[in-house]
Each structure stands twice: as C-alpha cells, then as structure tokens.
Length: 434
Image (cartoon, one colour):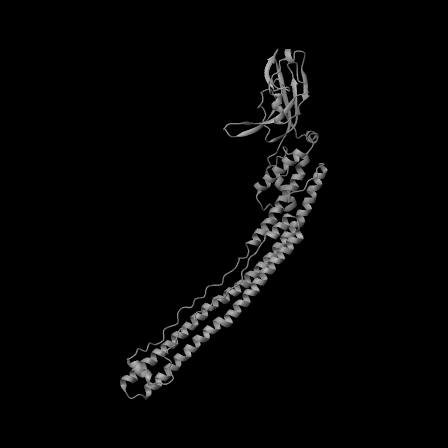
C-alpha cells in the first residue's frame, strides 16, 4: 500500500517542507474529522474498538480517543446477567450531585443487589486525574455505577464496555494506514497536499523578502589630503629667489571637503502580500508583488540619477581643483627655471634650480594623487552598476517567484475544492486549511 507521502506527492510532487509539520497538521485535522463524523459511520467503517473494564474509575484513559458509546452491564446478578444499558454522558459538575451521599440524586457507586437492585439508566463523564510523575494528568471515563470486581456467587457485579475510535498519529512514511478511518483517508491526503502548497507559497514570499538588501548605502568617499606644496620659509635663500619672480603662486591651498552622495531610503513591506495570500486573494497578492517590484525599479533609477549628478558636480569640481593645482605647480617650476637662467649669483641660481625641482616633483605627486582619486571615485561607479544589476536580478527573481506562486495558488485552489468535496461526501461542511 502506498504511503501517505507517496499519495500526497502524487498531487504536488516532491515534498519541500517539513514532513513533521505536515504530519502534525494532518494528525490535528484527523481528530477534527473523527470528532465531527457520526458515531454510526465510524462503527460501520470498522474504525472502532471496544474495551471492557472492571478495574474501577481510572481504568481507561481517553485523551487520544473519541468515545462512541459506553455500556454498563451486571453479569453477576443473582437472577441472571442484566444489561447492557447505554450510559448517558453528563458533565463533571452533574456527576458531583450523583456522587454526594447526602444528595437527592445520589447513586451508590457500588451496587448491593439485595438492597438496591440495578441502575438501568447509568451515566458517564470525563474526569482528569493526576498521573505519575506528579503534575502529569490524563483524562479517563468514569461511570455511575462504577465497575467493580466485587463478586456475588463468583460473577463480576458491574462491568463497563467502551466503544471508541483512536485518534491516529500520522506518519507520512508508514505504509500501514489501517488505524486511519477509511472514510477520512482521502480527505487527509488532500489536506496534506494543501499544507505542502501553503508552505511553498509562504516560503516563496520569505525568499523574495530577503532577496534584495534594504536601503543600500554608497561607499563613504574620503579622499586623502593633497600633497604639501614646497615650503618657502621667510629669510631663506628660496625666499630670496621667489621675491625676484613675477606670477609665482607660493600659496597652493588645500581643496575643500567633498560631499558624499545621499541615496534614497528603500523600505520593502511584504505584509500586504502575505495578508492577501492568507485571505486567498491571489489577485491582490500579485498586485502587491508588482508594487514592490515597481518600488525597487524606482529606487534603482533614483540612485542612478543621484550618483550621476554627484559625479558630474562634486567629483568633477574636485578633480578640476586638483587639475588647477597641477597647472600652477607646472607654471611655478617654469618660472623658477627661467629665473635660474637669468640670475648672476651662483647661490641664487642653485637655490632656484633646487626650488624648480621641488615644484616638478610636486606636480608629479599631484598627478599621482589625481590617479588615486579617480580610482576611488570608480568605486562609486561600480556601486551604481551593482545597484542596477541587483535591482534587475531581483526583478527577474520576483517575476519567476510570482509565476511559481501563481502556479501553486492555482493548484491550491483546486485541491481545496477536492478537499471540500470529500467533506461534503462525509456530510460535513467546513472550510479547508488556508
């Protein structure tokens, strides 16, 4: 006989969720269906069992069974076996009056035939008692009158027979399905398939929600300080050289701070999608997914525009400032070189040549700085491209996931319909699991 897992996979393919979770859900649903079915149907189905007890009030735990019928008999009566008599179910509070020796409705738990005869309208109720270890409780059936092993003429005085159906503990891998009532077996298969599809849809939304980072932050751009220009100390030979040169700029100042780009905030809320799915509003869930994709597309476009403007204003302005310093350093070197060729004093000529070399080296340092700055700025270009790529990748993934969700939703609706048909065949009207 095919296992439950094989039967479920026949409708939805390989199970991707937790088999334990599906088993637990099916076990809970089995209890609900067994409780809802008429007792006669379960007995006719061959799902019921019976047990006869003479062991007193705590003879049969019923936490994991549905009681169908309770019968009380008097096999040891002197005039012959009496019963069985069907016991009527009462509440725990009602039982208190029947067990009160001073009460009007008292029924003596142990029957003494010679004095009181038999009780032809017995009752039963469900009571919780403490088990071992302390604190662990279980429910049991208690009848009035209670079963008793006290004998009269070698016969048991009172017996209680319980007809019951055990609640099955579902195992997807177990091929032995005999403990599951046949009437509900197919309904449970559909229910397990519905649980699997519900998981797939929920899992798709979870993966979609984590597929794109929230509020990406551009790399912080902090350029290093510009190289120091040659120092002209007052009273030095270099200062004497400088005083004889017209157009020489000896104060090449630092550039100002470059401002980093400020990107928009991206905050994605997937709760409307999950709410729509929980309400079986598949059209709304698709619309909400499209809104999220539109948010990401707009974010990518806005980020691209902001980064382009930043490169065209802040970065370009800064690079223009560096370029002007390179030009000034070159002009200074040329002016000092021209001065060195004109001056007659050897010490001033040598000082001028040394100063010219410093300006030439300074120009090279500025050029190297320019290259380094440009390479750092390229990181922002790469970041901009990454935003675009990830946005596109997300859009592609969202599209594929949306298609998967729609496919699973369609199959889910179909299985819910089949499950509903099974309930109707059983004479039940209930909504399938959402």
